[in-house]
Length: 202
Ligand code: GRF
Image 1: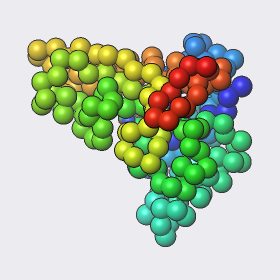
Image 2: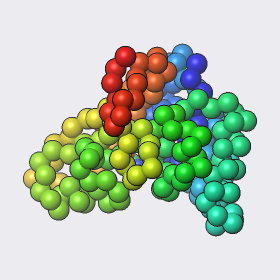
Image 3: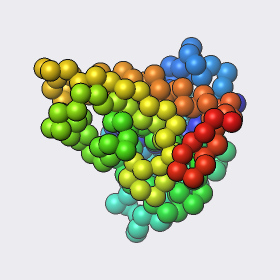
Image 4: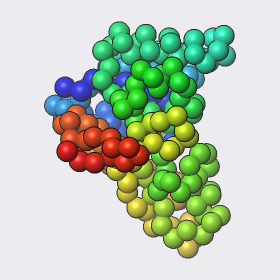
């Protein structure tokens, strides 16, 4: 059983998708969310975790002297819960070298574009601004860059003529909720290897 930590900052719909697929979907019998960690005390994701009796922890970066000290606290919790895989799900911070050193290859992220197009923030708006006709969602390993790590799964989403940021984001989010649990399942079943900048199936 793969032990997960989910790192969040807000709404937590991807956390919910992970929880739901553990309860009755592709992750049933494969994974367990041991702890949800937030950098924001008012993140709705924390409520979702509590509803499912999942342990939570909140660390506010401004209360620590620097990023390294902040991340060492997170690592302490990850170790306490013997976490195998850290899932970033709307965690709005760049992961620093301390956390990466401990969890490279054991930390994944979900991003609402077809990487390497549109890394960073406000990417649904960027997709509309560029007039792309296809965008999507990507699950990838986390490396030292911003949304640059080896890609695990992608799902393409069409952009429609009348799309707004809201309608496009909602269509992408549906796919996020499908592919994030699928990616975790591949890892739970030990099917992936990172080879340089790409991921290959064993
Ligand atoms: C998602 O679009 C995710 O791809 C991005 O942040 C958003 C988080 O949404 N990294 P939620 O908190 O999981 O609902």
